[in-house]
View 1 (cartoon, one colour):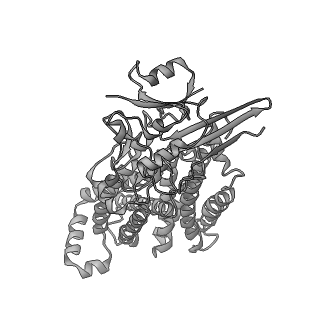
View 2: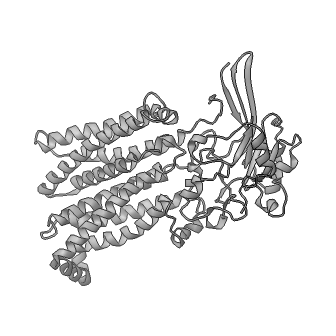
View 3: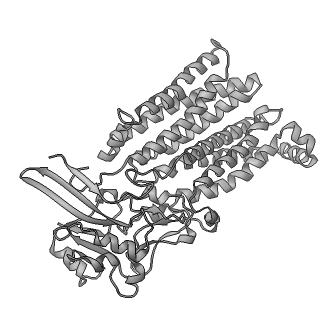
Length: 179
Length: 318
């Protein structure tokens, strides 16, 4: 079984939000909600100022607290590639998963169930990249199997320094930002 | 340059800070803890042989517990966003999910309360139903069975009371909740609310004196547990220290110190110590303050916990 992850090159991402629009269109994300978003972070003192622009979404953690806390098993890890998914008609809308996610990646869909990024599992099943990856004009995304040493993502992570978000939270996120 | 962090996401209930749980969850946790306390006190009374004579509290607490638990479950149900799938809770058992544990514990608590109530039902119920009267006599005749019911009631009460705290503390993304002490704190608060309620409603001077003593011991313990909770946060990681600051100068300082600690614990404890030593009369004021303080504790912990968060930035800017 694959273990899908994503590497995002922070030197290439310009925060154009094409990934956000592509996700909303592909997944019919309701108005007012986002499964992915852009984070802008800056720090330092002139002239050594550092700025990072990141495309963020559910980190499809290897140790997902949202799956552990779900009382019905609606939140689960799928067989295709350890993608964290939600079965809408098993979700009671208790919101424990929203509270458990240190990345605040989930929201309640207007129909009442918890919703979030699926890595476009419906596209990945057909051998396609997630919509956000497919549309990126700067090609800052690399999506693939982290367990395959020959995959693009494994090679990217082997060749560049990278960081993940909130590693101290212990969730072992599978989205990496190339420095 | 001031570090800056900005995101384009503004999902409802999530941004700018998590507000997924409103009044329903604090009410549910309070009522659940209160019922847990009632089960522990009822079990304690049965182990002490109080069922042998007519005990106003043994006749009242389990019945009131059934009503309160149902109200708590109603509050929980009202909080659900996908209500028509609530039955899914009982098609599986997810051992890593405290909420799953809780839903099954609640299923055991209902029959336990009914059986406990049958040991010494209210006279009115016995008059109305011969079956209840016969069941009560049969139970009272078997001392070992009553003892087993008492122990079961106490064990389930502890499980229910601790669960109301663990439900929050298992959600590691919220640093304020990330403490096992919450389970003990909510259990103590539940027992305190139950003792205060018993103190309030009983007409028996003997039971009033006993319940006020129980409440005073538990209230004093609660102060100690709160101190340990704060110490644990202040000795923890940066997000936990930030979470503690919500109560130490931050936006929840006044509700926490005034309503939870002052009006909910310290002042009623002083009044009740004076009442227990016969310096002042027993009045409804102190027990009512204790119960209101129990609700305030849940409200403050649930609300402040949702405000507490891990740092979002990777460069220490937020």
